[in-house]
Every structure is written in C-alpha cells, then in structure tokens.
Length: 328
Image (cartoon, rainbow, N blue to C red; front, side):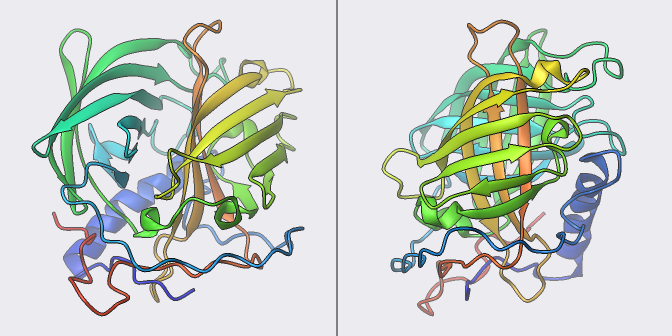
C-alpha cells in the first residue's frame, strides 16, 4: 500500500500519542496485549480474490460530522465512530492494567449536526460481563446525551452527560485517513488476532471476501459467526455488523447472544507505523433482548493478506498532508 496518512508533527505530538497509546496497550487484557504487541506468525487467508483498485482520493468532511476518532474521554482512552447518517458509537476504556472488560463502557446512539455542532441521545452500556466475579456490576444500559462543540479531523470536542448530570468530556482526532476508503467486503477480508474482547481473546477472526466472519476463542470457548456489510451507500469505510455468539464456557455465558453494531478498518501505512492495522467492531444487543450487553473487539491484521491500495486525501499532491495530525 502507498497511503498518505496523518503524521505526528513533532515530539510534542509523539508524547501525546504515547500517553494515550500506552494505557491502551496495558488495559486490553491481563497479559498486556495491545496495539504495540507484534502480530503472531501470519497465516495466509483463504481468499485469493484480487483487491479492487482504489478510487480517486476523497477529502475529509469539513466539518468532520462523521469519521473514526481516538483520544481521551473522562481521563481514559476513548474511541468514537460517527456515521454519515448520524449513528454514533463511543468506547470508554476500563481500569488501566486490568482486563479491558473491567469497567469499560460503550455509548450507542444518534446525533444531528447543525452548523458544525451536534447533539443526540442514546444509551451507555456497562461492559465487563465476561468475568462477573471480578466486576460486581455488569450489563445494563443507562440513558445519556451527547454534545459536540468542535468537529474537525484534528479535534472532536464534546461530552457525554449521564443521568444525575454526570459529565464525561472527550477530545479526539482521526488517527489515520482509512475512513475515506470505500466500504467493500474485500477491503476487510483477511485474518485478525483479537486483542481486546475477553470472550474472543487470542482467537483468529477469519473474514472472507463476502464479509462473512468466524472465530472460536481458545480461552472462553465462544464461537462467533457474523457478517460485515457496507453501511449506508458504502462511500466511507464503515460496516454494519451482525454477530451470533454461542458455546461460551462457564464464566463467559453472558457473552452468548445476538449482537449488532458497526465496524471499521483502520490502517497506518506510514513509515513510522505507530498505529498498526486493526479491524474495530462496536457491538451491542437489542434493548428489548434480556439484559443489555455490549463489547468492543479489536483485531490485529495478520501479515500476508493482500491489501487494496489505500489512498490518502493528499496523494494527488494537493492540500495539507497533516489534516489529521494530533494537535493538542
């Protein structure tokens, strides 16, 4: 691939990135796996289809009313996925140094932008039901509001407001330009090692060229069968996800069920390679199905998969090559 992705402009930005990325690496599971951990030995994917040719570069939305963002929320690591049609998923990490499931949250809702600012409503799901003996309260969802006051690729600033007027401010930005890629099953096909969701930890997620995926966790016994389909018109790198989880062993029974959500693939093809290549899935149960459950998966792409050309917005030679730089 030959992409133009956001670069860290100086050592100040590198320090900010490290301050966010290092807690992420330490909180995703009990063995401190995370984005900085090298991928296991590659396994060649079964698909031999040639990837599609990338279309001409697409400029980021201005204001950034949709996209994939990472940064901080209420002093913890956070991520947000905003879709072109107003869906929003926000992840709030759990206890640093512990399993990622411990104390983590996920906001699922809708928002509407007007003149560069947005407001919306949704639910905050309490994650961490895989090991109920370590977290006395898990599952369930509470109403919350979301507001956004600044929306650019370099700064998404806003807050979640929970019942009782508890406010969680956030500030995030685009880590790469991969969001601008069109959504196709071929772009996400390949194999990924799960590094975040404990019920799927260490499993290999196999995604075929039609977007169907499968995994079986050696830790929890959970078996997942699902599908990834381009969201909306597929103009941007967002996918609708359906997932059925079955056969979870004792201690992981809460992970069984039907889940739906959103996904994106985020790729750092820069010479520095800080970010890596990840398939990120935000998943939750329907509000009407038993106790609401939610979890987030991060799959590290195994090397050896053939990739489409990933285009950055400035591959044409025009424009600012640092639209998505960390700029705090």
